[in-house]
Length: 429
Image 1: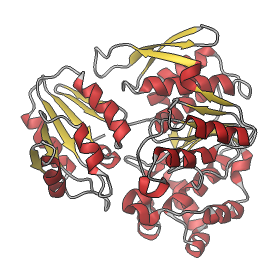
Image 2 (image 1 turned 90 degrees about the vertical axis):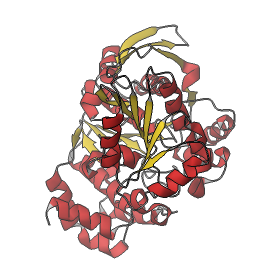
Image 3 (image 1 turned 120 degrees about the vertical axis):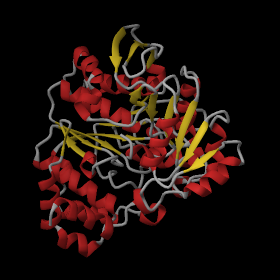
């Protein structure tokens, strides 16, 4: 098979959460363990860092991978979902797994795939771990797909576990309260393995402490270890300077981060806390840390985090898609200078619109649309629901048309924002 044929096989034969939602979710690790045994436990051949959370886990994973690369370590990076190309999920030192590797993997192991019928995610995790072992990586940064306790990535024995912000997402699968969701995320905490919690939250703090105590695992709350201040975002399209202070020593580090979202301050605290702990296992200098963060996008190819697509008119996309993530984004949009705000908006069909639509401003011009995935919410249905919250606009059957129309209508001093769903962003980056 060719690479396009191989990808079509994966999408058509294996249930994929990013395409069909809940029906693809497996509530056990049975297939994952079968695949892991079949491949002779490849994850045991490299050190790993495990990253879970509702918001921020992608940014944190990419920043840590970039820092490790700058320190001279051959670094694997597993993330999900992808935006443009399936191969974005599996990278070594920032380079995507080659197309021929994907084709060969599926052709060689099609028998076991058709035998146990894993989900798309289960198969991808197996491919990633196998590829990292074959590449002889020193360390791999592994981002959890969904939850933690029952996630396919949760067979690893990491040297560090990281749990970022906890918010309202995937509540139909992980639980209908923040506490239940946190309990699922806490499932990545391993025995006698340090864990970093990026944010001290009243509803979740004790859940993590109890789990860490049960596991004899040192626990660190990043916002109690470091404080981070970002410069004002005066030059859209450029990075932001930061000043981060070690609260235990008073030491201050200055640098620049290419990820311009206000929400990155919390992620930076998690990264600095993690690197401080990782210095017990790796040799990472402050220069490696500063340079690695500054080159996150260059080293890893990270896309879709407060990404500037155009400066005139200013055009921004962001993959924030749940209540907490969108609150950060909408606040930053409100504080960004503009004449008229144009918002290209789309969601998946299982999104709780009652929790997210009230976050959007009523004085913007809306372009309701849908991504080209089976899970996409119909744009007309979205328009009708949005009107109940005073969000007025037109509907467009595809993202490209909505984007083109917004660009024709926007003046140079306006702001165009594209978001609501990772899949909407994927069609413009």
